[in-house]
Amino acid sequence: MKPTKKPANPNFSSGPCSKRPGYDVNNLDLSSLGRSHRAVVGKSALSRACLETAEILGLPEGYLVGVVPASDTGAFEMAMWSLLGAKDVDVFSWESFGQGWVTDIIKQLKLENVNNFGADYGRLPDLSQANADHDIVFTWNGTTSGVKVPQADWIASDRTGLTICDATSAVFAMSLPWEKLDVVTYSWQKVLGGEGAHGMLILSPRAVQRLESYTPPWPMPKIFRLTKGGKLIDGIFRGETINTPSMLCVADYLDALSWIKSIGGVRASIARSEKNLSVIKQFVAHNDWINFLAEEPETLSNTSICLTLDLEADKVKQVVKLLEQEGVAYDIGAYRDAPAGLRIWGGATIESSDLETLMPWLKWAYYQVAA
Image (tube, rainbow, N blue to C red; front, side):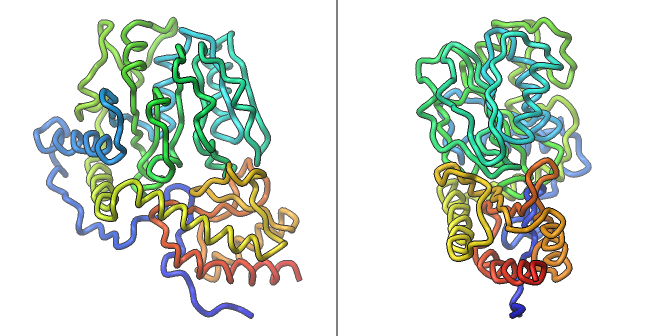
């Protein structure tokens, strides 16, 4: 029968993602709006974004956090253009965004000594192939495949290369081994439900050493420059951004960080996301017409939860459209390059009660279309 109760919040998009529970734009601190980002008030807000991020995530001593342009894509491109070329590169990919980094490394930067380890949607490549003397490029969580890295034992503690990790849909939702990650990038609009257009760049002391000892052979666009005269432009990591940021977006990000602190910190946000996954796992276990795209349980993402249905691709689209028409789930179709299916965001800003309410609607929509 058709359910009667609907989710209080039907926004299950995987990016931009749902705002936090209780979000109210009227509660943002707007004191920096209309002011220069270089003024004390603007620089203070940007500096807080960096410092509070490091504090909440529990970053190791000496790790730096900076606000950079162009979302996670900009942050990751900045890292690759600034750091790669000094060593051979091992790049691991298993979904759309990881494949994008492969393309940039081989076709744009034109690096020659590259080992490309790939896997189809739903699988991880063999991470044990990573060479400790090479730079390693990978995503922690496949946002378009729902497949995550389960642990970091494959990363050598005594490595001489750098680990460069796109963790945009993992930060604040998964436990990351920071001591094994030299460069981490993410964007505000994922687990924190923030606004777009800004990226976060986290550097270890080893990454800083590379920046100050290696000059790439290609021209460096201004928007990617992290050094000047062979020294790190450390102002970037104190709130002095490369270009003009949106101070409204910064205020929104600070609000999200305050919410994380209020619920008990990053452990609590991880727990919320894992609880969301458990709701869907229970549903999948009791319905044989729906499955996870991820083939191995330990690789199952708790943020971008990707599902396949026992339906043809056009009928899957009908399910997505029907749920949207009923106002119970928006933007849950699989990513355009991924196999036909559903992609339901399970990050910390989603209430598990809304997912529990959504599950009967999934079943109803499936049988409506399959009949």
